[in-house]
Image (cartoon, rainbow over all chains, first blue to last red; front, side):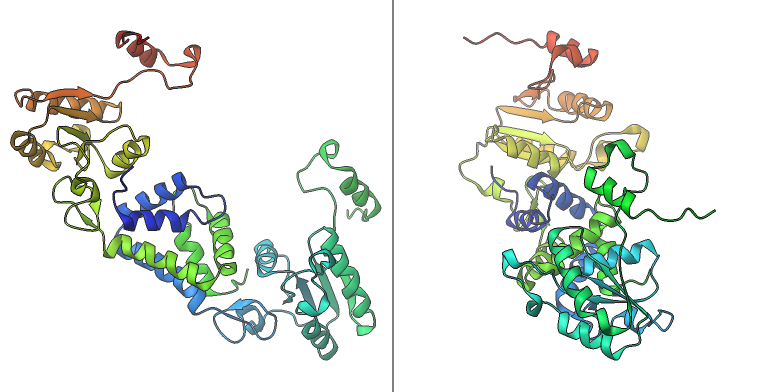
Length: 201
Length: 201
């Protein structure tokens, strides 16, 4: 196969690096771009470039940000009483998308994983302990994956923060909204029975 | 929802413009990019930019190209006896991907579609007729979609090229390779019976 152009090939190869995007899909994406106005494509290229050139890390919470402090830390409408600790900015974005949390965040940059040699000192944990000590948080929410690493990190942090004066909570586990009981796995269903809550009526 | 950053938002919005890519997928793509090394992301941005800034149209066949003539027209190993006429560069790429054609191409830039007001003069047809007249093609292959527009364009070109001295052929229609007879639609199955070929053994 003669490629019609090295430029097209390079773009196909670049887009095929996205997870779940193969060469055929990447080629279709490139064909789409070839048909779009120049301005739109240049804008996309610039948007991707700025992800690396202009983004920095919020010095307060560890979130990605265009300035020294991220928009969440800067927002005066967000409560300084509730701190939500997450593994990564993708978890922060997922929680933000729910619209159910109006406090501020702390990003660890990973989870404690002894099997992979990741200990507390490799994570953004010391600044978290300092923040909780210096802040006046009423609640620290630990919002981690429901995995061994998430549980280990939760256990470690809950002990460290025990005497901070803040209530330590973690996000609930149970059957998915919309799911049917008979298809839920035993561990999840068991947990949802143990963690049953008072019916509000 | 507070966005974590305008830069992230812009990148999500740009990637969500790809067909079949929604905001959630675009966000996942951005998160992927945030985790990749800077060089890789800048290379992708540049590859997209060059699609618009450095690509031009081959003055011989109408294919996208980095130079005045595309790599296919420049390749001395490709036969100048067989010309394959296609609607668009995406069709050219699809045929190239099969590895079954070693001649050269001509791109119409569309198909005749009277309902949409697209006539022969709106397409790259006059240069095609000139090429066939001036060239020494033994065969002109019409490779269009199996649609009303494809058939109309094929009929028009076949009449125009009738006296060119070249054999006018079109790509075969029939049941897909790997398909089962009972699931083929009637028009396709009927065509595959009409166009049956001698069994080579």
